[in-house]
Image 1 (cartoon, rainbow, N blue to C red):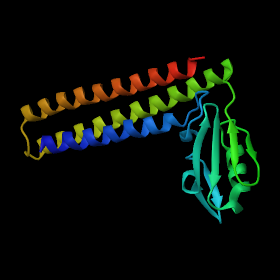
Image 2 (image 1 turned 90 degrees about the vertical axis):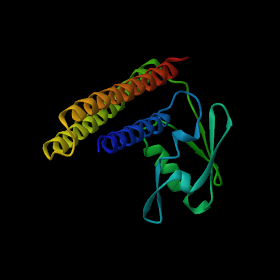
Image 3 (image 1 turned 30 degrees about the horizontal axis):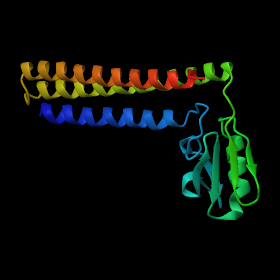
Length: 185
């Protein structure tokens, strides 16, 4: 019973860290990356659709992103969606393709991005702690229902705490890496 609860907690915590990694990839660092724009929602015949489903996105040069829509009629919608996003990018629309030059980050913009990163890191840590609390509640309920002994509950709680500590340290390391990537000039 305790193994099931611990495996479930481990799985959920792992997914939280993976989601954080994906989310932080979309925060720009001064280098071009398809991950910067692929999540942008574009109005495609009345439905908000991620850009990655509407166009091929490539990086022909280190500071340039090229977007080649499969349906040329939505190129203006893609242009508007990029401008509306909070990424601060200016697309260049030539009628068939969109090119985005990634400008150098100013010191002020770097500080703003670091604040965003810290906020996302804290949200992930809170999610991990909430998962720990839910799992501890499950363990207490199992003990109360005589499904596990008090010793099993104590051991499982200790293992759960170690698991939580490992994932929080992993989140902190991801944050430090992303922060140093942004501060890199």
